[in-house]
Amino acid sequence: MTISAGAPVVVGVDGSTVGLDAVRVAAREAAQRRRPLRVVHAFIWPLMGVSGRPAPGAPVGGGLRHQAERYVVEAVAEAGKVAPEVPVTGAVVDGEAATVMLAASRQAALVVLGHRGLGGFAGLLIGSVTVQVTSRALCPVLVVRGEPRADGPVVVGVDGSELSRAAVGFAFEEAAYRDVPLVAVHAWRYPTPLGSGDFVPLTYDVDAYGDEVGRVLAESVAGYAERYPQVAVRHRPVRGTAAHALTEESKSAQLMVVGAHGRGALGGLVLGSVSHAVLHHAHAPLAVIRQAAGRP
Image 1 (cartoon, helix red, strand yellow):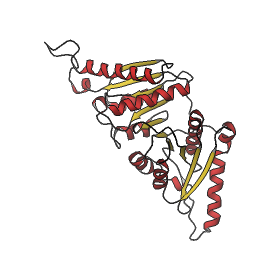
Image 2 (cartoon, rainbow, N blue to C red):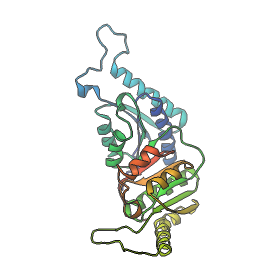
Image 3 (cartoon, rainbow, N blue to C red):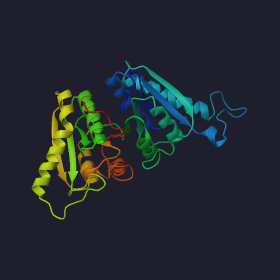
Image 4 (cartoon, one colour):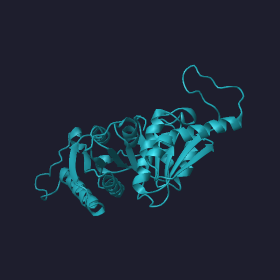
């Protein structure tokens, strides 16, 4: 996953309080990463044949497009309050919300969305626009549920896959920015196939498999732990389902990080299964990573 040095953090807004929560989080992310912030409102009405201009005789400043522009102005101002050092731009972009944000992800370092919204993001409900963007974006996507807590660790789901390593790398970076510990979670119930042609033994040694889980955790974080020695790491093997384990961990986390696809005990980590479940039930903001990165 290659991101250009000048790529902005992009946040979608719609005039809702949820959208402004996302703006505040995005502004802090941009400040931490020393990147500009771009505020985007998806203006769907032209696609529906509806004019956004004021009706004849309407007050100056009326009409749907002026309303959309006010949403952006308000969001830009809010970002300036949170991170005055961050360069902020805003735009009203004609198009459907998911399409607009997916296009923005091509040039973004991070896309930030509220977990639901109004106006230009009327479809931004878990399972609709959010799922479309998190499953297809070309950069990491951070889904915000209100104001995130200031305490608690960054928690990442680990399964030993290359995409899982990309999630681990993102999680280490976030933990370093926030100066908090990292908790690496590997949920397991029983051995699972790692690829086509593999098979699951009829019997297995639970203790031996537990040791293998520990090895996966250690190897998954090893290179990044060397790159970020200031980040304290806790390994957490959990016997149970991935969705349940990650949702429980989210209760004390300030950020959750998962890969969009995986294997092994997190083999269901595709949107619509584990990631979808965490999107629905997590108690903390969730970052979804869908492109593998090179090893550290």
